[in-house]
Amino acid sequence: RLEAAFARREEALARLEQALSRQRRFAADASHELRTPLTSIAGYARMLQEWGLRDPQVARESAATILREAERMQGLTQGLLALTRGDEGAPLQTEHHDLAAVAEEASQTAQTAAGEKVTVEYLRPDHSVNALFDRSRIQQTASILLDNAIRYTPQGGKVTVSVGEENGWAELEVSDTGVGIPKDQLPLIFERFYRVDPSRAAGGAGLGLSIARQIAEAHGGTIEVESTPGEGSTFTLLLPKKLPDATS
Ligand code: ADP
Image (cartoon, rainbow, N blue to C red; front, side, top):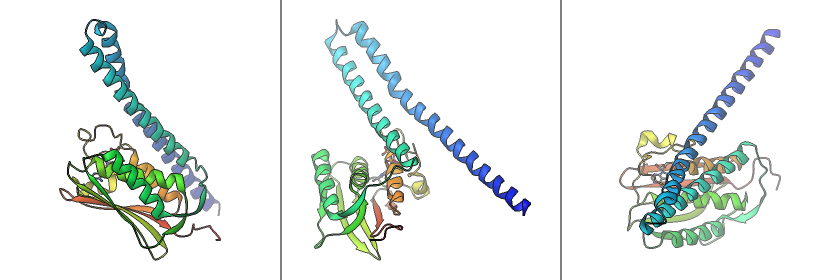
């Protein structure tokens, strides 16, 4: 008996050690990601200080870079905050909502953001798709999937959004005709800071999908992906129609 208790304690310790080491890696990765835009901001600010008053071209260029990098840092810190909230198990504010309404709203916002680059088509279902979820978090998830679909789809491509339900799950699907993801990378894209091609993904820090999946899992759901390189990808958010511990 004592041995069993001892083994359990060892296991608990090992889990704690793992969690700590994940935490340490997260902090190290986050610092690293924040350092890059900061270096660039400092460099361009110095250039602005030295040459900006004499050369308006240098001034414009420096200011534009500083702004762009600062915006990147804003996105990054927002992402880090979202992940931390999720890690700490911040409570969900779940109510009954129509997933179709969320999808439609997100599609419209995405089309505005995409401009002429890609077409965003929303396939409206003929009835509402009700589920129990935290509206603002699911909105965030939908916009992460849509932002990615637009970002990784070349000019002239198409993004299609649809919702439905099956076997007690409410589904939101975002398909694109974009660059796709190699099969061996599929399990990795949900990891924090992971990017398939860091040089291509200017702007993204590799946090979007980890936030999206964390939100889905907090709801007892998940996100699935299918992809063919060169043809496109489909991400599906699955939410249980009822929360596991919900009585209604
Ligand atoms: P990022 O900020 O880099 O977009 P994400 O966590 O949202 O971070 O995505 C991780 C990686 O997964 C991206 O860098 C990209 O390589 C790949 N990815 C995500 N969505 C798509 C998509 N719709 N099409 C192709 N690749 C994608």
